[in-house]
Image (cartoon, rainbow, N blue to C red; front, side):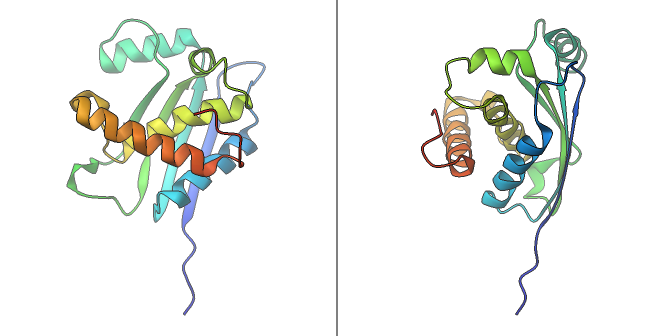
Length: 157
């Protein structure tokens, strides 16, 4: 029996110039995470922005002042069970992500990837704002996914 290969569409755009991330490296990491999570298919759109743009989006979409590291926008509500196609947008503030991981001894792409994993977890229905237990569960899963995708010995967490 032939096993079906999952289809993962991962687009990455950068609104920063010069573009700080190697999109091929980041895309490879994201696809590894999707395979590890056994997502049957995905259509993810990742947009890397600066703090100013993130601050505007954070205020516009979440009603919060200041910047943040990542905001996820699911296409479908994951509450009704695991979707067949994981689809949505992940907005990243590259300066904020890099600032929060400045001591990590890995590439910029690997550092930003941690926050992409966080965004993917939100798209899958995890929400750290539902309480301490859910936040801890989400964090454990993020770390497990992140470590599984990093080259051996390269995970800073």
